Image 1 (cartoon, rainbow, N blue to C red):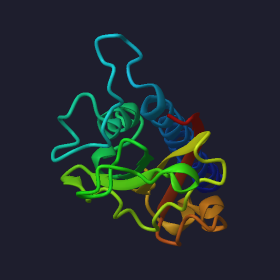
Image 2: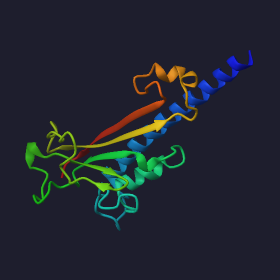
Image 3: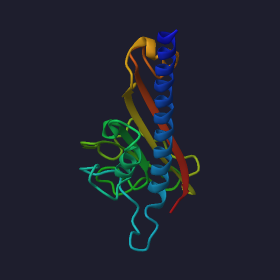
Length: 184
């Protein structure tokens, strides 16, 4: 009876960690999207925050830095995540604009702990918002791969049924938050 009880308890621990990661990533993407829209909302910081820049883990005012800080504590390696930020602050390289009128859109930048891609190079490219120029869509997509706390097929029975996890206990989460902001 004891081996069965141990197996059930270890499955519960892995399942609880799975939900802890899911809740943490969902909250981090929502908070990052709000921050990309409002910034610090102080007169001293009138400019909206960047996606991440050359060093997103040390750029204190960036959306990616805030996202990594939100994930710290609940995740074993938060800097292993990739963060895709779609914001009107991301200007297409050398253009200085994000379109005009009905073609106004947010450009995407994908950031990891080592740096960010060029603005507008996010995959896939964000389409023009159907509500432009009155509203502009902001999005943050976090992609994170994690291993369960206790490896082994016997201890990951509920997770094996999930399309997010494979039989070895590796799970890939993608959490996205999208919000519209009033245009310029």
